[in-house]
Each structure stands twice: as structure tokens, then as C-alpha cells.
Length: 94
Image 1 (cartoon, rainbow, N blue to C red):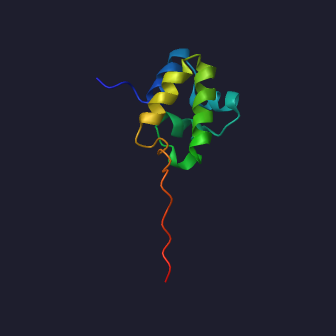
Image 2: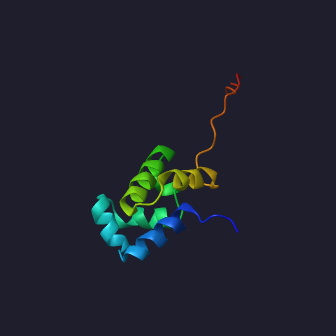
Image 3: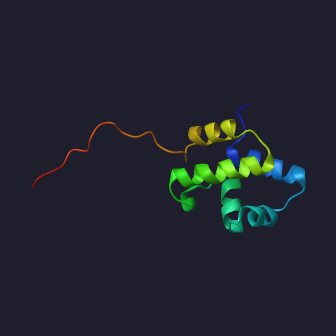
């Protein structure tokens, strides 16, 4: 089976500690909606990939789970950051 998504890993670890999403949000000084979005792997509302990665890193550290595999799973996800194009965009002159 495929490895669990970043959100599923975070949610399981949080629930194993008996914490609510509200408690995590307070500890991380974030809105509950951000925690819910992370756990549901809905990253589009969280801004640029650098912010998502920062939230995932902080959340993983808070829950004492390995951050490297968490970020690798995010990078592999469909919503993860797209690799940068090294080919410049062509301009169209009219």
C-alpha cells in the first residue's frame, strides 16, 4: 500500500496524543482552519509551497514525528510544489 499522506500522518499522530485540532492550533499560534487544511492535504489555501512546508515542519516537530519523510510525502503529492522550469517562457509580440 502507498505511504500515508502528510495530513493523515499528522492527524494520526495528533489523535494518538489525544490532542484536538484546536489545541494544536493554539500551540502553533495558527487558525484551526490551517490545521484542518494540513490534515486534509488541502494546501491551496495556505499560500506558497514554502509556507506549507514550514507549517508541515513545525507541526511534525510539535508531534515529534520525523520531518524528512513528512516533507518528502508532501513533495510527492499532487498538490506539492511543481519543479521549476528551466526553460524561459517565450514572449509573443503582436
